[in-house]
Image 1 (cartoon, one colour):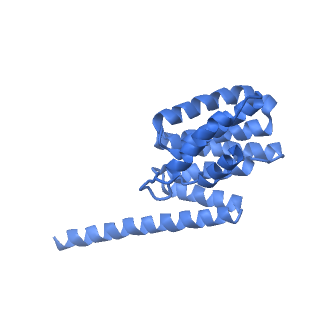
Image 2 (cartoon, rainbow, N blue to C red; image 1 turned 45 degrees about the vertical axis):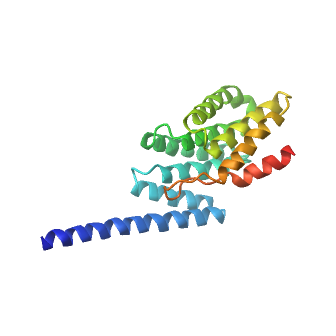
Image 3 (cartoon, one colour; image 1 turned 180 degrees about the vertical axis):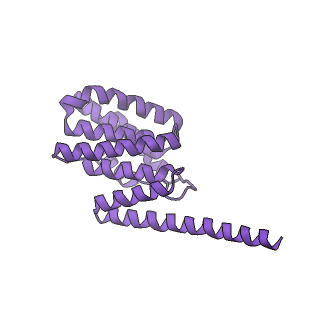
Length: 206
């Protein structure tokens, strides 16, 4: 009995240590990202993902870091390398967590980065995919503020492109901002971005 108790305590200690390493590693990776150390942040998220093969979040953040860094990138070789890595890690995250609205938004952001780089080449095919991704995300999570905001921004961009009024989508941005005040997740490091962006978009609406 004594041996069993000791074994259980040791196992508990191992789990706690692993959780502590995960927490400290993720916090360090976010710190690097905040310091604009993109490669270092991506590499650290990647190492955490390798150590956490059943956790979609580190894979998601590898994808997100590389996607965000791609907006405004003029070097096609560098852009391709970043977005291919983003897609690769996103696919693993999707395998771990199917039908995850946060991952659908991330996939749409990768597509948007390509469209932003070369609309003539990628706009036609990827735009229709984004419409499908945002529709599915909204169906899965109608109360997720990131879903509502991202879809509204996409709809605004499409309206601008075709010379249409963007104001009908302002109410969606306002709704997203309301939901940011109440939306919570118990999962450590679950995505929280979007509130400041919603405030900026809503200000431009007014």
